[in-house]
Length: 260
View 1 (cartoon, rainbow, N blue to C red):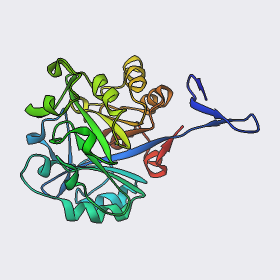
View 2: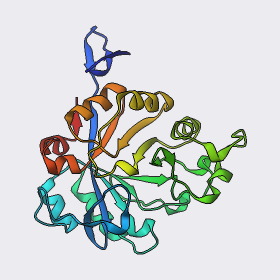
View 3: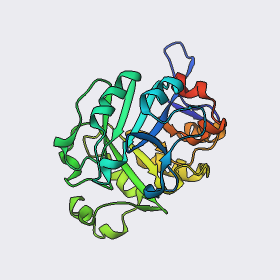
View 4: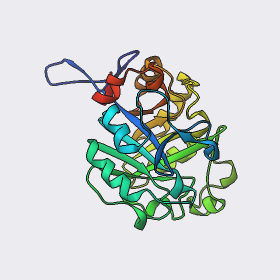
């Protein structure tokens, strides 16, 4: 395996030909009150139905019929905030796509959702069981203003060798994930959601170097240049929304589900 700037991670096949791996591109939808809402900076109380952009409707099924993504990331904000539940809707949305990564505020393994094409996500914000108890699914490292967002008892869920749990960084959590049974991780920069703030190449490379598993990035992707930055750093996927509606990431990319 070799790494080439601007071409991402490449493998040399048996004929000596470089094969470029593609990075998945996943459309994000935040669900609140039965609608797709536009998120910004993690201030969920102020999220409103997405009534601008490429879709004339914020009703989830109608929205996906217009957007036609190959892959979808859905966050059930009501369930995360203990104010509702979109489980039945999420199961229907899974029929629209080839893969659905869903964060519905799972706290324990028993809350994983079974369904076709569904990849469960448990976030540091809601996890309430030791990480080594989860089999499969993705760990979302939820970050706000550079700090891991977690429950008060998060420190009790970490390995005993962590001497100062209060100072655990996103990089620390990604390293810890390497010894778990999660299939992969999502680095979710909550404070950058909906802001188109961009991706710092050095930060992306540092985060990628900490995780040996499949790794997705979400929050602040503003353009195809940012997708290239993440691909070059070796990320396996990028989660986007605002940039698609603004036209800085072409709709075709999320419909094809990949970027190279």
